[in-house]
Length: 451
Image (tube, rainbow, N blue to C red; front, side, top):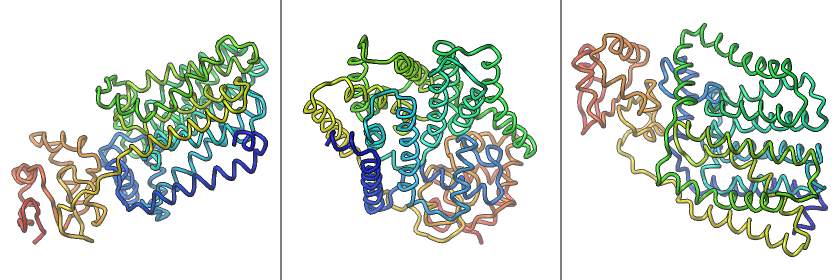
């Protein structure tokens, strides 16, 4: 198998694409059970196309570029069931960037489509990789920045293309704000391993800032700039520790990638076969891993897919195994072991639990005062409460006149036919907005219908 992949670059890449597409197809045939955060992203796109303003009307902490991506999917009427194909397409683009960077700058001897295949293989560690999450989409631009940094390190003659590094990193940050912590990685990598000047460092920072400034101007015109910076601050500069349970889960599903990368690093340390420019790339990758650990402490949520920024470094370091091991049977054994380990972790991932419907209505304009976001899949969502954890503080503080006005505007903008109140907030709203709540009558436990 290794010999075939090494000697047939184009054919092996096509085979990897066919195999990955087949797995995406199988995922769509297992029934449509969705992650709550997957449904939330889908609904954000809907609400944006209905004229709601991001962060001010829609209370969520998803990066602004990611919400624009979901808005585009809704505008094109692409269904939620297509997510596995979209996620695989994004992973394939990243695998091609990864493969071309290694090939173009000769970071390793010719390995056919091995880099492409290993990258795609590691993106099958868990079911969550079948979802186009902001962290997954933003990783594309981190890889583009990595490619530019490697190019600058290759000759020590740094040119003004470093401007692109700043643009790519800012774009990644606006998809997933915690990626801000990869900016120091880029600066240090250029400082340590290239002939970058102060002017070119400033040029990199200018590229980063210009994307943020343009985005800020757009949000300023729409009147929700303060909310953007609040989300940016809370999602990139709010340190929190991962729980023991979440940490064990992440380590289990990422174990094949971690062990593969650690084995590759072990083989490469002190090995004289590694060229000088490849050594720079290896050390740049280690710096990426270091700042990734800082970024992890700022994640807004510890879903397994949010840790995807760890996979490219592990994939690159692990590829050294196939370069530095001499005997072909050992290379075959490592490859088969990696495929088996990925298959094992994927099989251990529990399918998304199909929740029983709590509301026996469909095709109705529905507002849910609670976390039951999956009920919107069979009804038309009314209101901006896509992220219940962020919406609750608004309803808990209705003693504030400002908050009462905000809730009133939500009802005026689009009046629901049904309100499902799983957490008892309807009575609180009734105390402050009786003119609205008196239009509804209780028709079943926790469910109100417009008269």
